[in-house]
Length: 365
Image (tube, rainbow, N blue to C red):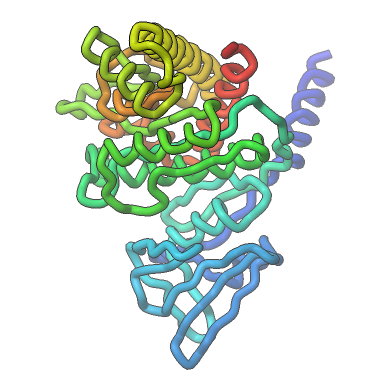
């Protein structure tokens, strides 16, 4: 009987690793050899203009990455991004820095990739589960990667900036939402490492109200503490904490944005704008609770929930649609940072937020 149990669990484990086999590529001195990458992803195409040392990497018919050898920048869809190390060419071999490899996984490879870098290897496996496309009653989802440019945000225990984590996870979230909800327009407030005022971030979302009233605003941030040695852990979901002055300001914005009929009598206009403001607040709370619920289901042992809270965040105060701010984790906590850097956790974050939005969309009315 005991032998049968051992055999049973051996079959289960063997089947699991057969379905999700891990692959390894040498990672030496911060570089991955392109030829090693292409062996695992044969649809990657490399072209090189030797006259100006310009490289382009594509995947099938998708837009590609362009960069010059020995340059600490690369471009993608017209955006210029910095590199910690330049791509180099040695003995007829192209060596790619970590950032380009990560962007290839995020933007060019159609299959979801879970990966991690060790000191000597890139370890990854391909997620075989396809994302099932669905339609939800939401026309626009605006994703706001917090901070950027001259505003780096908090500093992580590994020396990285908050702005880097928010942009990286925002890009993954955008890709996931586009595949999950193909009829919903997904927009980022910033696509690269650039400074944006809080007013401009909310304005980008508010402008979409001219096209549809079904707009959501999701702002991504990372938490921190002044005492890293005693840093808390976990994610938090915030909606706007209201008082009379904040409510009055939102009602005025509702009227100026013509979300109500401005031809009405002033008393009726005040009532309508008040009702609209209350509706936005109720839906924001519902959105926050649903995202928190689905993140808890998806993250399980990765990141814990610290609950749904309210705060007078400026970026939420400026938006006039259901809005939440997600603190993805404490980057002053060593374990949270490790989790946020793992692609598998980033995918779970994206999936949890998407499922929370779906749950909200099906119950908001």
